[in-house]
Length: 234
Image (cartoon, rainbow, N blue to C red):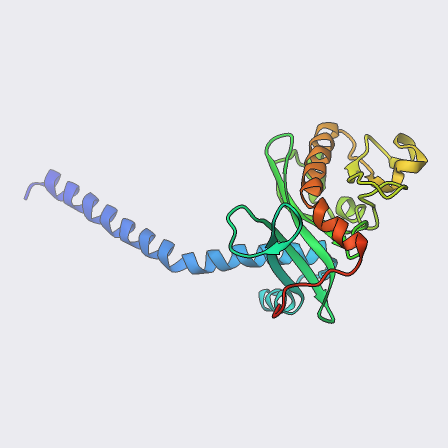
């Protein structure tokens, strides 16, 4: 065999071996990757409802155990009724304490300046008050709109209201600057401080949160009317 053919054969053999190794690695790591995705989702749901301290790292086992013990996920229809197996149903999770829902958690999927902003928002069982907010995916500019992923920004949502002083739906939004300076006193409970230099990020996230909260308003109304029970066997 000529040197040229030997070189070609060697190259083909190396390419084949590398291909097999990559395929094997991808297959072998698939289960781990899927678990990591699931754990990240669980972690952010727990953060949104205040069950994980962002400053205190938790192990995968701790996250999975806490999630299993405290969170129940279902789907609801457009009228806020809990249903199952409906392709048109809306996902919703509940923080369960003493066998009763202490808060409900909504997935956030909002437009941002450079792409989607994804996270979770938790509402207290009064159907009015934000229990927490977390962001796990975004494409916003680091140091500007990217501050939405920082604890200082997310913690501003805790205690804010999704209804106005009269009890009507009002959502929760991001102010252009400090709430105390930009928003009238009667509406300050519905806003968090904005991020300097990230007005558009705040604008898009405000619009996205309003749409999402409107989708879940039928469920919120049920919580505002009184205790909500989860399906039997939950």
